[in-house]
Length: 317
Length: 317
Image (cartoon, rainbow over all chains, first blue to last red; front, side, top):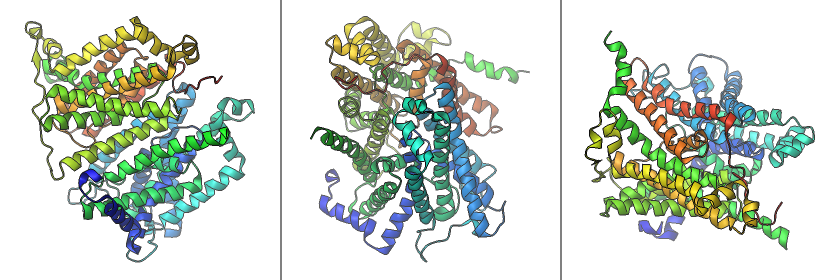
């Protein structure tokens, strides 16, 4: 940051003010945090079982795609019925995306990192294909974008005139549910056990394969709902730039939260404030907004190291 | 009837083979680099980011007036530095190689974009550089069909071929190479032989990362002559798949990269042949689909380095 010639302290102050300084800024930050809570949760759930789902980006788009198909006029229901149906269908779409990689991993030992990563590219190309073909909005002035979702499918705004939408409440709800699941249910226990020591879990009679498939389906489903929340709450329609890497940032969010479902809320807000703040900072101080990505990835690596050092100190002292 | 054989005639066209070898070059470097890392037992998912930073640094150095070869060298040094960071976190500290690798990719990619924007704040169309010229080897390059492909390429392509031979020789015929293989197969035994596991693994990751960065530099300094955001576009992940396909052997890595690139060059020409009947995105998906298929096919008979992804801690059993 010092390279770019702006005073460092001043730049940080601008970042802080841009992220938290006003009602508008807060709304932007939490609107940005909403998809990150979903994708962070998706990564946290999968990583806890040592299933490396790097495909949240693709699952998000798969969820968004199904919402676009169903939500732009195909279904015409009361919002009270419409929104739950859309949530479920986006979750199913996301989960299906991850079914292939998890089955390949279990049956053939194919590394899920590579398959989920490559699927991201495939889904994005599929979205591009459909946006230029069957799903293209005739009113879109030639831009590759889909028709906006109907009013019944829209997630209501929380405050008049601000972009913060009720997807945030949904995200909080899911974090809470998974916190309960992970500490209070057999499934949560099994998911942790599989992640901690697969052999021991198998020896203890746990259905390791089934637990892994369930974990993957939940993780993919949550990432799919992120797509729903972005289309129905934030943007209104599906475009190719729906997600500026929410799937990848979700991994950072999950690691910063140390894979804790409630911690994800805090770390997603933290990461979102950096992104929103950096946008504001780059407008007023002339620092390229890519600084946000740099700061976020540096904080990931620092977090990894510090967690390790903390663990060592406890053992040795 | 003439047109029905057009899909075969592509193979007789010298420009097809030239393109195939050109596309293969960055993949050769990337796969070779990843082979070196994984042979020593360290999965390097930083490859995508390291290729990006190599592409940016090499290009930027030349743009700022450095010589072409010093640009390549600088890219290699930068890639090696990020490799060192990855190795520091994963080898002595034993952090998760998956998460650290993704972190390195995020950091290196964002840093590339940031530095690029910092140095060139307001350019809409990416400026070009005077890149490597094809170097013709007289006599051999006039062999029909494949002559130009093998003997009229830019120096970096020759360098890629030479690197494969050198790496294969070092890996299989020298004490250093055997030591690298040993720490990847059985670090405890290597330690018992008096080898320094940490040092060898770190060295292998640094060296492999330098190769990856040169692969990235090829894209900006021999192929496109400019730097774009997202220009690596998943090539790093494809290299990870190619490593599995090549069963961790440098020679097969070369073969795999060439096969893959030939397919890629072929689909591009086929695309022009069929025109707009089939959407172009289908063709763009093919490389990713192919990588996943290759992984599935090869998964049954893979010989993973035994200690891949397992951190080594002295005295731990």
